[in-house]
Amino acid sequence: MRIYAFADEASPAIDGQIAAMRRNGLNGLEIRGVDGENVSAISLEKAKEVRRKLDDAGLCTWSIGSPIGKIDIETGDFAAHLEQLRHTLEVAQVLGAKRLRMFSFYIPVGKDPADYRNRVIDQVGEMLRVGEGSGVLFCHENEKGIYGDIASRCLDLHKTFPQMRGVFDPANYVQCGQETWSAWEELNPYIDYLHIKDALADGSVVPAGKGLGNVKRILDAYRAQGGEDVTVEPHLQVFEGLKDLEQDGNTSHVGGYRYPSSDAAFDAACNALKELL
Image (tube, rainbow, N blue to C red; front, side, top):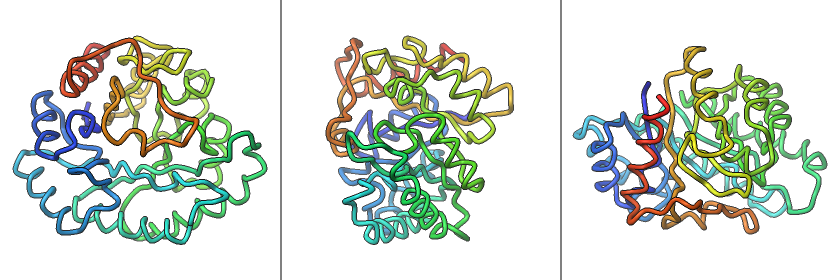
């Protein structure tokens, strides 16, 4: 297995992220927060600095943990979002990332996602067209509150856009009331990699294997079909910047596992995965 991580949960500083990855013997980074900025906002000069530091440490950038597609389908400024995507792809080129994690737009609370399907399809299609020729694989993550939050709508997206792969996040499915094994059975032909995250019925995030996400069963099935890449996403204690990544009314609940520091929580998440392996 090649194991990566959202190491901004260990430290907002890239140097602290590198230390956390090396301490846990990881292969590299799914990059999201960089020295207080989202990866989609950093300059190309900053990206070059990060690349040098990762190269010196023997680490890679596996995927861009971007916020692309995390705007409201009704009120979001989609034109500005496409410009953000174009810049993010330039950052990906500098960092050597071959994947970009993306989403399928927040649906207004209380509204029927089906009413927005055509608009979602149009806008996802535009994002994919922006990425054509970039060499970066777009990977859709199931996320609470977006169109592709449950398996049936993720399947709709993948059948519509076979060039788009999937990131399977068990905890997010649990938080949406979606049974994870049935989701895996439906979606596994389209999945590129896994996010290692688990949750309880109340939405609380817990170490992998301690919740209802069937993480070990899905991990074993993924490996059996040749899957080799996973990203640890701890969420075991609230970290700086989390509130900026989620929609109002769809915030994560931190589970009953408490750690004295972000580094300790990060290490616990890595160790939980290693126990499952």
